[in-house]
Structure formats: C-alpha cells, structure tokens
Image (tube, rainbow over all chains, first blue to last red; front, side, top):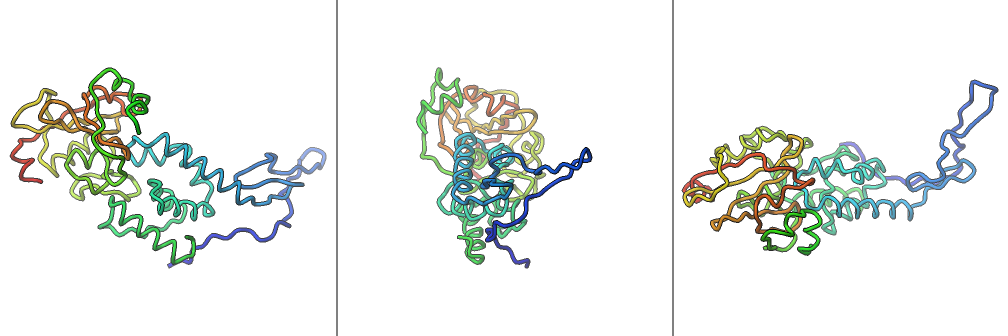
Length: 146
Length: 151
C-alpha cells in the first residue's frame, strides 16, 4: 500500500512563481490574489495560515450541512459547491474531514475517497454509517491524521 | 429541525397536514425508510460507497430505481395515488430525470418520508414537490402479503 500523509510546509522561503511577459521583458507574479485557501501572500511568498485554512473549512462544512441536510442523493450532496471546494483544498483537509466524521458531522466519505484515492470501507459495510466511520477513523489513526 | 424550518425547504408543508415523527438521524435515508430499513443509507452513487442492492443497476435514473424496487421487494408501477387496503405504495420524486426522494404511503392515506439526514415526517404527498425534490415521477405498489413476507 502506498504511504499516505499530510505535510504542512516548514519553509516559507520559496521564491515566488514568476512569468516573463513576451512584451518588454517585464516580470509579473503568477498569483495576484491576496488570499488563497489558507495562504496569505507577502511579497509574493505564500505563507500557510493553518487557522484560516481551518476556519474556511469549517465555514464551508457548515454551509454544506445547512444546504444539503434534506437531500438523499449522495451525488447531489457531493457536487454541492461547498463540498467541491473542500475537496479542492486537498490533503490538508483530511484531518478536518476525519474529525467531522468522528463527531457525526455528515457524509464526508466521498471527499475522503476523492482526496486520498483510498477506500478502506469493506464492501459489506457500504451504506452503514457506523461501519464506514470506523473504517475511515481506523485508516486515519494508522496515519496519525486524527 | 423545527416544522418552521421545514416550511422553508418545502413551502407546501405550511398549508397541509405535516408532523415530525422522529429525531434527526444520519444512519438511513428515504430509500431505506421506504423499504423499512433504518440502518443503512441507500444510494447508487458513482463512487460505490453507499448501499445499493447488488442485483440492481447502480444508476441514478427513475428506471433503475423502479427496477431496484421490483427486484428487491416486488414493487410494480401503478397509476393511482389512492390508498388500497391490500397494497403498499411508494412514490419516487425526480428532478431533471434523476431520482431525489421516495415516500411510503401509510394506511391512513398519508405518506411517511425520511428527509435526507433529517427527520421522518408524516405528510401529504404533493407537499414535498419543491425545487429541492422536484416532482412526483412515478408510483409503485406491491401486495401487502409481499410486504409482510419481505420484512
């Protein structure tokens, strides 16, 4: 089995991504937004802000829970914009998602499977929330993600 | 969720009979509840994470749902919403051709629904037609004898 873990960057000294303009040789940062998921840009250097990242996750999860609670369709739940944004936040979102699952916060299995490309749930446990939760929490604990 | 909050989701509940009949529960959904299962979440999701009868097509279409109900519990398509003492009925809702919800008829002619991961309610069928659930797509029925034998 592939090793799987989440790493938070320890260095903030990466050079900014730059692009050369074909007109006049000027250089522009590729990322212009002042804030991207969990990051603040200072002088072109992305600094990971874990608190903001978790706040963003929490806000998105709250919105998703509020707006999809009455839906039975897992496909419709998982294609909700807030859910898709959480998937787009990538491996760093996994510990948050596992905590959500542990605390009874909803159907995060699609997101976990999409991000990790793993599926620890045995076929016989499909649809059984307690067994699915246990399988994912066991998976997370083995990797020190929760 | 309170009845008042449900009215925001399903405005027609405001003007028809409706009562909440359970606590919120994420362990089962409307499809499971329509078949008397309160232990699993049934859905033919494309990632294959949720329960769907293995003998049925894993497909989100009304036709595939009808097939699943027939294979699992002997339901057949019917044309009447009226209660029949010797038959149990299920209504499937759809939106844009995709199933969204199922409700089961009670002996008193009202319907019982599990609202996603929220509560069970007793209601009038048309009151759940909404932007969220779409429209009633099809009615199924099976003899009460089959219902008794399957449970």
